Length: 450
Ligand SMILES: [Zn+2]
Image (cartoon, rainbow, N blue to C red):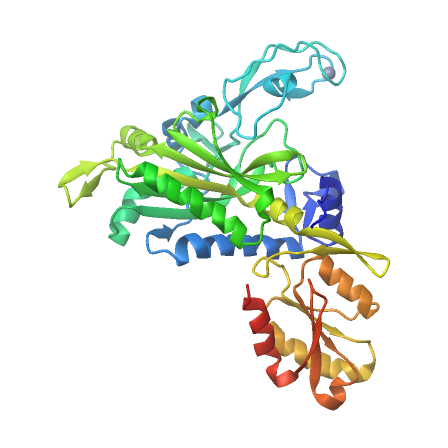
């Protein structure tokens, strides 16, 4: 079936075609930060839109919000991040390099944070120098709010978007007059000062999350947990991920975060092995209870059916946009032999493809420019499109294949006579002649066909 992309091939394609660049590359870059280029921002937006559509727009029990990145620092005391969001770290006394102590003793699970696995390794893997004792290193980025840099003005860049939802639970409930079960969804940047970022955009220091906190009555939590595991797994398949590359795994007891009753992960078969795309946790009533305690505010829900005040349980599907971006690219990547030449093709789902339609005049001949421009004007009102007239038509098809453009429209010399153009499909390479007045309808029919 499809050819697996290596991380190297992917990094090269992403740079060459303007999907992802190293952050501040002209200054040598900065570890764990990446920039999304012209096509990358389109793909990323499409992933976020597909998620928002599925979890907010198409449901009547989930609403959206967008909280600030910097929050009152007490939030992180209540959430436990100030005390427990840390990795054990060792420094080399010779070369000054820093390592995660648990990474030196073996594989680091994608979700591993906290006190687990103190290192027994005493020598630097780089230079053989002596290592310090493991120390806990908090992963939150610290900053100062206001003009004075003192302890009272310390604040943090949020390490997850979730807490912005918990602190707004009462606000949203009052404003929407919704009943349980009620979900609040949010997409936004989060920051973790990972000691060892890596695997391209898989583990970043600045990344984007798509999270839902789904508040339910205690006792119904396990049933809703199953609902969300199925719902989220199916979302990946609907967006074209190949079934053999996606799986759901229930975490073992010892892998669970301190707040979780049970957690499932949707995992993808990355080049470096099965790794987490999304975690779906049962966070119980931990967060609302902690925030009620630290804020002194009432965060209970009045259940009209039973006349009781309850603290809702929370099911949390939490996905990382950047690693989804990487997974969708790897999954779509394919190479095939076409007449002795290698055709690189991204078989991206049409909803995700950065460009939906490319308009290509057969040549740069003057006569073709006006009709080609007119066709482009027709198309670009409806879809993200591109006009390309550089190099041979064969090369331009390849360029569009390589970034996953589902449809190309070619304007040729016959167009001047018959007022028709050719639609060429990415996957089948089939071509069909369509009159210009019917072009938009013909493209729409193909883009909406699943
Ligand atoms: Zn060293």
